[in-house]
Amino acid sequence: MPDWRSRLGARLKSARWVILVAAAVLLLLAFAGKLPWLEGLLAFLAIAVGAIVGPRKERRILPAPISPDNRPVPPVVTSRSRVPFLVDAQLAALISALPEPALLIDRRGTVLVGNAPAVNNLGPIRKGDPMSLSIRVPEVIDAFRATITQGNTHSVQFTERVPGGRAMEAHVVPLELNYENKEVSAGIDAVLITFRDLTEQHRVDRMRADFVANASHELRTPLASLSGFIETLQGPAREDTAAREKFLGIMVEQARRMSRLIDDLLSLSRIELSAHLRPQTVIDLVPIVTHVCETLGPLARDRGVKLEITKVDALNVRADRDDMIRLFENLVENGLKYGASGKRVEVSIGEDAGDAVVSVRDFGPGIPAHHIPRLTERFYRVNVETSRAEGGTGLGLAIVKHILARHRGRLTIESEHGKGAIFTARIPLSTSAGLDS
Image 1 (cartoon, rainbow, N blue to C red):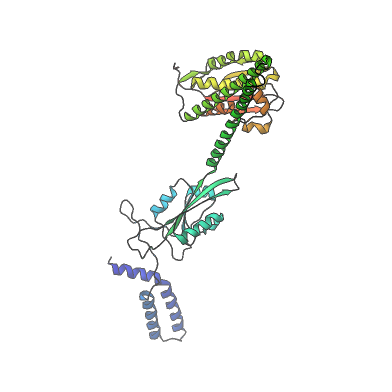
Image 2 (cartoon, one colour):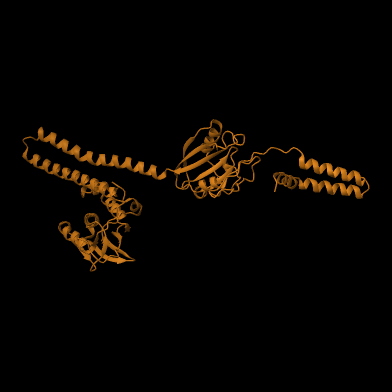
């Protein structure tokens, strides 16, 4: 069809309501005898021609985008825009594919596109709604206005009190789309706002700071003791044999405490470095747990604790042998140290729902419920004095948690105050029948 016919058809379609209303009014006047038929016909023709060829308000229309197969892609238009900014399907698809929450906003603050992560984080988002209905953070609104005014990128951090006090960061970026006809797009066309959740990063930063502070404190205390006793032995107690023997015994114990702490710190660092590498060697857990119980037998006898073990024939898992020894040493030693008052520790080995299950149960004083969620934190202790008196470093259960995480296992803790505690490690069973040496 020639171009002039296409334009004429578009004009007729645009002016159809004006022409229909004019025809209806003129016909009524003619039938009522208030307007001669000839004059009515001339008036109708004048109105129709004026509606079709009269001046039209210039609209801001962007050229249709082209898809990879060279076919025009229909644009997405916001329903409330007076002079709409047309979002083509490619731009909308790109924003929808972003992994972080993202909103495309026009200059007047109207939502053009919102992706699925934005809906999950901000709630329902509808095209054409004011951005203030979805974003209720004054800092982000101010950053949007500054971006529109100044034309540069802004970043703001803010905290959401609900849910859970999330720390967030918003990046507000101006978009100026380059079209061949610069009269169509001049200046900032839209603003892209992306959000990033900083809660986990802040948590890790706090944990790192707490870790350094706690490690420094744990090392500073025995170092201070060693320094004090050395000065005493060099001075007033130089010739005092009894005091020298007493102080040397304390110094040996403090040196051992520092050695244990350093060993645990190194073990934890080694486990974290290999956390992403799941072991592939298939080993039998039963002889490992049995060996650990036999090794800790003297400690049980010294404390007057009966150490009992119930086991199956074999439990094959993909695991690192040294890690497994360290894991069960920590669990059984914890039971012997902190549950000694119950005079009995039970170790059971079995399987359940495709997992190897090893439980260590003591009959000591138990653990208050509010402490249980934090037991695997580094340097967390239920009772600091008792832990230090028992030679604990505060890292044992943190090591257990990280070993199990590397082996795709998990730790559960059950306790009732005054009735002992049960620590259960679950590790997926191996489907391979062979054992690697």
